[in-house]
Length: 208
Length: 235
Image: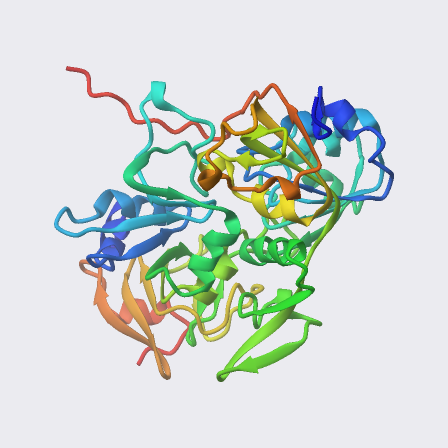
């Protein structure tokens, strides 16, 4: 049984460790914030210039000067600091962020990631994704295992323009958790009732 | 009255704007954008502008207003997702677009303002961004050469400023504004409040006045793009 969006976020939250500085991408990765275990201390970075991101505000506390990278209104915490975009990407590119969790359109068996552009369609831009995958210590991708037609999204080689090469450490799909290892991808765990045969049928990348 | 203080955005821009100029505009989404100076730029009627800004506003606010009037020839941005008119002009080849990764864009502006013509980064190696750029190895890793960026005019938004041009930003409205303030041949800052010189704590100034040539107090709508809220539990 494939994991739901919320279950995917819960699985991804298992990546969090005490003391981590973490950047969460837009979409399912944002939901990971709802699953941070209460016994560990995690600080969320927002690449538009904030460390220590809080929850959405109450109606009366909405502040137009306080948004996250998805342009959503948010709140600050006691620990919060603000900084410029240059300082923000010094944290990201400089290897000071422990973990980046982000979405993907395609991942290759060598850890190449494509998540910003479909040629022929309107291109919105890469935002901070290329900097995040190039600079953050550990990159975890959260994605659907196949596309809407049921075709694999975990491939031998990406067909879409890349966000980065050899950057993904782990894939968490609705079917399971997979590590990028020499020679292909390795099954770490599967969602309930999902079989290795099913994963093999729905994956183009080599499974080792 | 100080040499730097101007009564409004229109006068602050007067005598500076010409067709074909490169303009940097601060802000992330609609947060921390120089609303008043964008409107004044629209009034100026300047054409064929190259605009450096992380985003392109929305259809009826921010830089979207300059797209409506077709004053922008080229955008240098990292993400332009929320703008239908942008999409229409781009798909009809009426608008040039240069995508930069967000961190590369921030660093190009920081470098430009600091007199650094180029720098190496690993962001974008192996992607479309790296095509045609010099590659170099440092410590066994590959990096690409990116160039510093400067502008004829930078327009920035701060929270408070003074007659010396010292600026303090507020929360995440800081974003690209401090680097852009350093990278403009002329930098114009609009602030919510101009205070007496000496009021701002010198230890808390984000942009020292040397980077700011003109300053004005503006009215700010501060439009919210995504109003996400937490509902109070009803007892």
